Length: 366
Image (cartoon, rainbow, N blue to C red; front, side, top):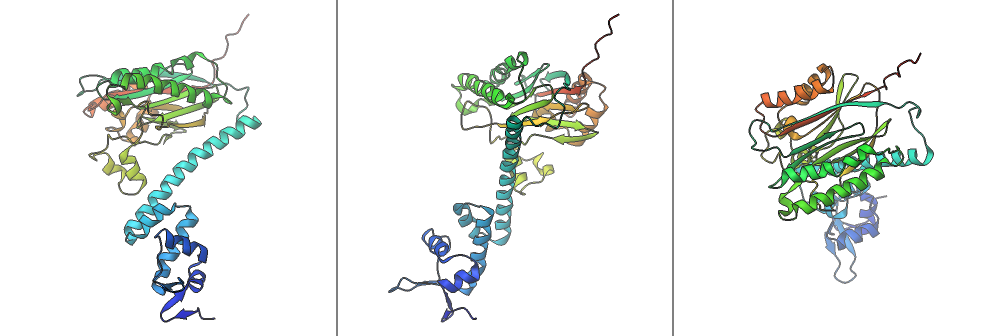
């Protein structure tokens, strides 16, 4: 049956059927100026649509199925095909990142409520670790702070006039965790509370300079079988497992957002003029929420926490080679810091390397 046509226009019912949008949705999109009808009868108020509007209507329908908010759909609909595709890609990258965080939290809650774990809880592992922080070759002072202990590993990279005391205060606020036994079931809650305290300490020091002062903060808290991660800013955590290097943090930076949106390649990001600009950092602003997740560890894993003084000048491939070649964590931090300085050392560089190992056997008695 042919759709009902008045002149060259489709009635709202015919257009709804062709576009797979309900008449109710079409009326809403008209009110929101998202998809205006081609003609409105001045007497009856009845809406008519041109056949040429079907492409836009179907795009709106598809974007709604993606879950895109109406305000963003309005912006996408006004763009040309290439720009619209880039915005859709950027939207979906944000959805995937948010979904990954929720997935990790869901897995944590399931594990907490059911006691499920892929690991035999009687097998407890240990950390062997080393940390090093260096001023670099250019900066007049070191605004990084590091900590490595048997339970806590942390790196902070301060910025602003009070950058050094701010980064130190953030790490210092977490140090008590190194002395406390924390079970896997409660570790994220404990870490979240501790980071809130770190934010308050940073706020006190940064008050005079406002947002000019702040710090990144990336830390791992060890339970004996799992690592709880807290992360805000562009310091990073890498995992070397079975000879492969994985980055397990996501930079909260302008250039990373441009990479996620497909507007920048990782190679272009290395020399981008905004490469040091952060989208999130620890400044005492409660709206700056860090990432929190639980990570399953294995014997043989090697972890690296580092400030961007390393990653700005040393490529991931080279980081992996140096980590794999190091005989122990101390050798790892030494070779990584030396590599950054050999590349010009334009920034402070800080590294913490930790190996996950089986506990040493107790000496025989007899």
